[in-house]
Image: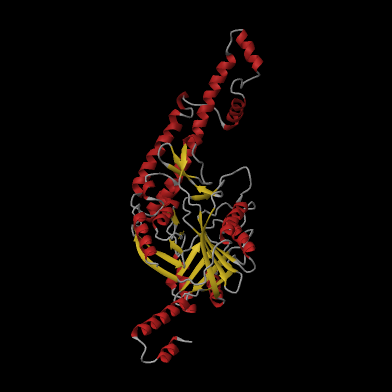
Length: 515
């Protein structure tokens, strides 16, 4: 019986209190109905139709559309390196015009895949919108489960903390510091944020999972691949049943690398690591308690982040260091004025191997050393001492060469910044989404793990997760305390150190607006 019929049947003698109670019951019933969640999901292949490179596995855009009766939200996961402002604007405009969904409620996340090799479809924006349209047209009532999984075996912080109180980034593009210089690593976030959506009629519709890791390991044949998240999603979809779609949302991975990223003794372990991540998602997703009534809310804000102004000073500092290294090569370390070694690589390598194999008798068998000792001669001992010095000097030259390579990388990046000569602030959007108890807050770039950990700790909600690489791309966002260093991210960033406080303050304010 409807609430209106109940009011007519009670009659005029009914006390006001009862009438008020019935009215509140009607409002409550309407709210419960509004909180019944519907969702749809769809996938589009965004790989080029005319690839010029081997395709190991396809690139996808996946769209999840949710509707609680009062608001709709769209979450898009794409196997691409970054989302440009142009792509975000185009997708949002078309979604609003064609589907009537508020463009502010669209989140577009890039997995930060490094192995697209420019083989994405020319009409990628069109295909992404098609995925949204398909998802919106196939929505069904769903119940959701929210939880946290863990995976600490497949990734690590790639920032090496050094004895000189500076840091260095593990990269294939340049040599790492000597092992003796490394004293620690940066922090890790091993949480997996998981949102599972099951159809009320039965079966899993989708699993959205949030994790922080750079997808740049690649595959053995060097081909185009969705990388680690692609392999993880495939495992999840196979395990969760027919039709289930897994959407990967990249986390605060600015300083997080897959384990064994620079392993030269085996093929890239990307597929194995992805399968490990997928199994960890499954282990949590399958045991989540499911709720049929959930609502959604989206809030966002546009802020300005200051651009760094120290480029010229940093260039001067690096050029002074370069002079010192070149002075080493010119007069102290590599042979000038008789101060160094006369070795080249051809003569260095066999000497180095001999002294590694047998540091006590490198030049000949032990009996010849004993024969010299018996005749009070030390020719081999003198030769060994001279050769050890030559080897040590040559090794010093190698290490200085590696320093020079790392320094030159930083100099070229900073000089590129200087040529850009842009002092304007970076205008960015911060977006926060709540789906039941599942919270995500965005950042348009490569956020450090420490910032994500700080936001999670300060959030009033236990299931708060970071969707970095979302709705734009401003590059690296290192923590304010490392700007004096020379690691890759510290040099490459366009942001002034003040960005961190501005972003964290805004993100937490938005999160607190979600209830």
